[in-house]
Length: 156
Image (cartoon, rainbow, N blue to C red; front, side, top):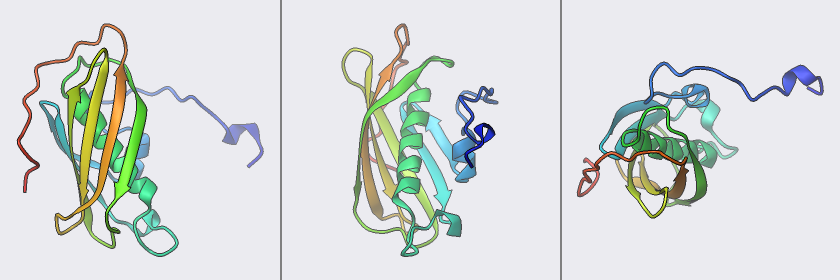
């Protein structure tokens, strides 16, 4: 693996749509169920390849789903083609994921100059909250935020 051809990048590619999964997210079989008005719902199956040493879902896979859910919620309120990046994130694991399809419910809100705060609840196959994710994203200059309608709570 020391050969230069294994260490490539950055890679340029075009996304089919504004709200769609990138290659890494497709690798994890993430599905976007909804992304509208500053909220998003995404799912990901627990496959054997996503297990850590004890056979539970790897925390990095769970965090990827949570982060991607916030990204899709952000994309639902900004102009397509806008640029933004994560500046901070925190993940709290409440109980392990042992099986099934997991679901991420994300919502976002503007927070100061070019900042967006995001929050995701990741639920297990029984719809119990297994992890809580909070993050901050910074928007590129001249990015416009559309009007947002916030739900009272996540769908049951």
